[in-house]
Image (tube, rainbow, N blue to C red; front, side, top):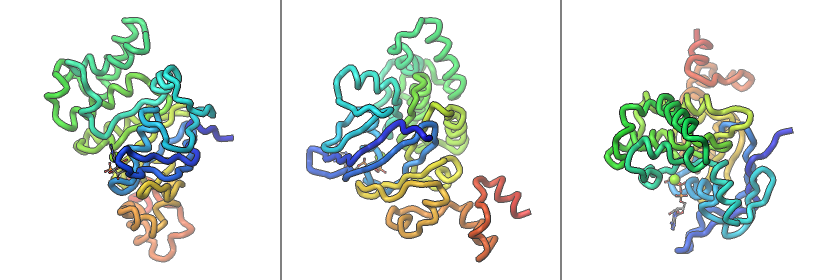
Length: 274
Ligand SMILES: Nc1ncnc2c1ncn2[C@@H]1O[C@H](COP(=O)(O)OP(=O)(O)OP(=O)(O)O)[C@@H](O)[C@H]1O
Ligand SMILES: [Mg+2]
């Protein structure tokens, strides 16, 4: 049976000015999955993420982590933050050390690991994220895309069981965007769940096991990429488009595509067309 790592039960969140950012959300995140969260600007994606590691507390409803209801006691939240690593949409709010190296080291240092282990881990993450040439720079001098990569490196370094990334490829060039997605693929396994938000339907289609769509604080859809991206009305309502691979595949097979298996990548599509 599938195991849920995170469950939202009737969760609403209202900001101090009265904005209802999330409205009675029921949502289950299955352990070990790769999930993409999509939705219009202002849909509530970032708010949902901030609820996931206890930065925000629901105005009403409950959140369960590994089956345990969050009570928002200090110790519990501290522990939760070691299990749920978040990359914020705006990297400025994430980076605060005087060098990139120290920033990446911050998380492992807080986990009270032995010094050699910390150094080894940080080195490994720097190689993986190709941030070697940046390591002595103060984070505030970095370009937007470089900041994003350093913020991601910082989360990779704490090895969380649930990784939550708010638009991780936003601002990255195609090379680094692909690299980050490869790293996310590598990090995903039976016990590590990865949830990311994006406005890129093609990236979501190729990468995710599951797609979640939020729309103005409501959960509109949750399912496999093919299920969700075939819901025309939902896509329109959410300012989304069908992934190009699906469109080309349908065009190619004309009316006869419904019983055929959709390709999941450009390589698979091209193979079918040969
Ligand atoms: N601190 C705040 N105070 C008041 N309203 C807020 C605050 N932060 C967000 N909101 C509002 O809550 C709603 C959801 O915002 P949120 O940032 O979660 O959306 P989002 O889906 O992440 O959007 P985007 O795609 O633009 O990143 C929006 O209407 C936004 O204006
Ligand atoms: Mg956002």
